[in-house]
Length: 272
Ligand SMILES: Cc1cc2nc3c(=O)[nH]c(=O)nc-3n(C[C@H](O)[C@H](O)[C@H](O)COP(=O)(O)OP(=O)(O)OC[C@H]3O[C@@H](n4cnc5c(N)ncnc54)[C@H](O)[C@@H]3O)c2cc1C
Image (cartoon, rainbow, N blue to C red; front, side, top):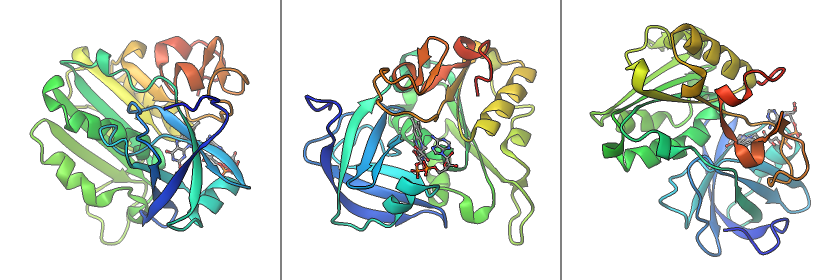
């Protein structure tokens, strides 16, 4: 849903706030009418009087009447969004961007790689695929967080992995008391993957440094740039390819992304 003037936010009601980790909260917002979006499309969320910032809904696109927006507290707008209480009125513009290229993954293996709050945009993809598992061969989810407290959606991994076609694997950066799982940054669990590389599509979302090294590791493991899609969560403003804040070469990440094929951008300076 885009309002007639795409620069004017639509009012949405903040109905619930979920504490996910010490630094991440999910806001559930209810638009006046369903906000239809594709997994991977993003919205500009406005806190009146403070400002707006881009976020990719983390909820299923099959539930457009209530959106989950999972937010890492990092600066001016996100600090104030974390302080917002149920009942508050926020604003939304969008959705913007293309969304994940689901048409390209029919019959394929899907490798989903997330770092930190990067699992939030990917959850919309995971939920969309869980609702249509017959369309893909298999889904492998690899996730890394700094520490156990920062593992996002920790209570949902078991439900995702109980599907025969899905496997989930996660790691935390350093050993921690009470943690018997894997340790090391997420790239450490990308080596020797049990996936059919010739028939696999990869989606990565996380901090730029992680995008860079995950892409490097996958390339070393034999994946081609054409198989890799990167979530480019760069600073964006208009959302419509007008302001030119987010372009890489001829590509406007707000319009041609935010998930973009690595083959398209790899030869531009500093694509990450
Ligand atoms: C398409 C898209 C989807 C996004 N989805 C999510 C999401 O689902 N959940 C989420 O938590 N965040 C998401 N982000 C990032 C989010 O938009 C920024 O964290 C937010 O704009 C920061 O606003 P602020 O006013 O709180 O921070 P500022 O006060 O503007 O900045 C605080 C600090 O954060 C850094 N920063 C600001 N914006 C970004 C950015 N885009 N990328 C990296 N560092 C940044 C600044 O350099 C500064 O160090 C997304 C960004 C894009 C472009």
